Image (cartoon, rainbow, N blue to C red):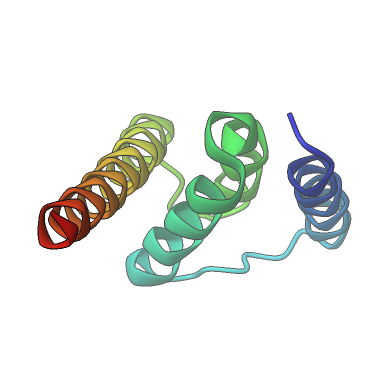
Length: 101
């Protein structure tokens, strides 16, 4: 794991602890929880799952199974997007090589 990702995880953990200490529901709607899940999945991946679950647990509408599924889908979505971006870069490189010939 690189230094940048370690810093993100440390920041997420500190934020999670502060939110838990204040007993705040920082994402009262499903849309906000979805955005939170994608943000954590994008920056931290699987390593951010525990903090996401802790943040979700503060909601009076907490459903652990739904939160797990949301995080799983967010991580999978991130992986699919990264795969597509990598594929596009490879296609661009091969197109450039063909044009040079």
